[in-house]
Each structure stands twice: as C-alpha cells, then as structure tokens.
Image 1 (cartoon, rainbow, N blue to C red):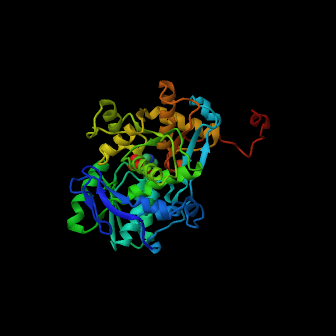
Image 2: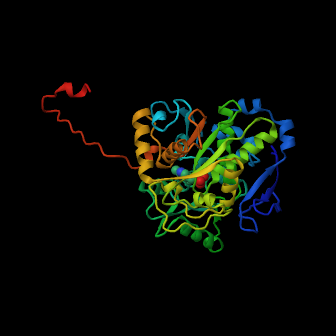
Image 3: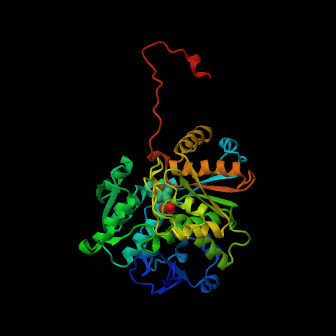
Length: 408
Ligand SMILES: *Cc1c(COP(=O)(O)O)cnc(C)c1O
C-alpha cells in the first residue's frame, strides 16, 4: 500500500522536507506538518470507503494518515469515542439541553486522547525501525507512549514532574517504561529528553517535536465530522496544553474542506487554559503571535499545565483564523463544574475536560457563545484517573436500619 503523503513542511518557514525519513523539528526549530496530495485523495478516496472500513477506531482514517504499511499500525483496540449531550447540567452552564455535547476521549486505550497522537507517532517510529523512544509527560502522554511502544516491542523512557498524579506515574511504569520523577515541570523534563538524544540514542517523541502526533490528533477532527454526518459544530472547546489536538483538528478541517467532504462555516476554536497556567490566553489577549514561558505554573488540571509550547503560534493562528477565542478558568470553577456534571448527568469528566465546561459557562456570560449553538466539549481523559471527594456515610449492618432515611 502506498499513501497520499507528498512531503513535510516547516510550519513556520514553509521549507519542504522529504517524507519517508526520520524527522524531528525543522531547522527553524518548529513543528513539521505532513502534506498530502489532496487532489489525488479527492479522486481516489470516498467517504463511503471510510464508512465501510473494518479497522478499529481512528485507524479507519488510515488512508488519510502517514503510515504506509498496514502492519506498521500499532493498535490497542481503539474505539470511536461517543458524543454525549449534556441534559440536566446544560442549563446550569447557561446553555440548552442537548446543545452542549461532550466528546468522551476517556474511552480510548490508556484512558486519554493521548492514545491518538502516540499511536501514530509510535507506529511511524516502528515503520522507521526506531527502537527506543523517550518523552517528557504530565502523565497521559507517557502512559500512551509506554503502552504503544511496548505493544510494538520498543523501549520506552519517560520523565515526569515529580508531582505528576500518582496513578499516571504508576501506570506508566507498569506499562513497561523506565520511569523517572524530575524535580521540575514538563519543560524541564523535555530538556532532559532533548539533551540525552546524542548520548543515549533515544528518539524524542515530545509534543510537536516529531511530525506525527499532530496527524494522530487530527483524527479527532475527522471522527467528529463523520459522527456529525460530515458537518461541523458551531464551536469547539479544547483544553490546551501543547495544543496538538487543536492544531490537528484545524488541519483536519482544512483537509476535509479541500476534499469537498465538508462545506460551509468552520467551527470557532476555543482554547481553554487554567488561570494558573494560561500562556496562550495571555498571548491571544495581547495580540501576540508567540506565548512566552508562564512563570510558576500551577493548576489541578495537570494535563494543561504546560508553561511553554513549541507550537504556540499554530494554536494562536487556528484560534484567530477560526474566529474563536481563548479563555482561562479557575481551579475552583473547574472542580465545581466537574462535580455538578457528574451528579446531574452521570458523566464523570477529568479536570481538563471540566475546564472546557467551565469555559463554556464563561463564554455564555460574555456572549461569545449563544445558548442554542452546537458546542463540543473535549473530555480528554477518563475522570477515573483523578482524585474524587471521599464518601462519608457509614451504615452499621448490626443495628436496626431506619429505611425511611433512603426515601429522600
Ligand atoms: C495532554 C492533555 C491535554 C492537552 O492536550 P494538548 O493537545 O497537548 O494541548 C489536556 N488534558 C489532558 C488530560 C491531557 O492529557
């Protein structure tokens, strides 16, 4: 099988790079984007071919992805993640029941949407014959990398900030990665991975520092369009760390438009960050093209605690081109929204996913979003990986039970 890839392109300078070879960042130190022959794809690939695919989850989009050989695809049983409309909790957020829709990425292998990006990056690394991958992580990326790398028989080395949620650190180690706790933030971990490249010979699979995680995250946009009958929503709220998903979805929509599979207005992309770490929001508000390092980054939403992003300008471009905005939310707001949606609608979001719901509420208040617009909230990981309030209702089986207490 061949595919439709023509070349790679520096996202900053447009300089062209040959496909079919191992690449990291461009010479300008910026992400490389995979380019396809979209005219040929338009002529040779039909929506029905995708609909009839027998592949698991996002591998149904393999013809629109860079992996050349089917046997290079590393799979852990991916699924198409469900779209779940909020009902009871929608009104509390200021919207209308059924118009706020959660895309629950927590159903993917390793419990987060990192599976999409890492499945692609690991499969490409496998195709190129690489045998040792290293990554800095706030948790979920390391878990996905470890799982897919071990499935492919590759060695995995993972560096986490020492205050990464314990469950993430443990799952990474248990899934076969050499796992290290670093007394710093994710950018400090990234520095170690970068500096170790020559000494150790591992491949740096950090966010946006190789070309293929974006392509994996692109499948969120393809899948969303397919699930909505090849239409797109009015707005998309995305919890933004390194921004891979936001950049990837925006790329997906541009490619779908070029294929003629979608038409009409593109969704407004809304980048959501936490008040304690909001470099993209600040740069957006200041009219800047880049987002400098955020000092003293802190938030309960560990997945979006990313003080500096190598693809900052790509995130900001997508947000601006789409007519979207960038919104920061407080940790208290995140946690109260998580608790309300869980108890009102039975949908347990992770804190980063809850941040999108909190941002939705603020966007309704400012009028940036109207209550009857179709809004997608990305729940990026399973809520089960995060701390939850304690239960304190003991019941003594040896005492007479007053059953009236259960009535209301
Ligand atoms: C990685 C991650 C994010 C941020 O995703 P990016 O595409 O890197 O911006 C948000 N939430 C969770 C739970 C994550 O693991």
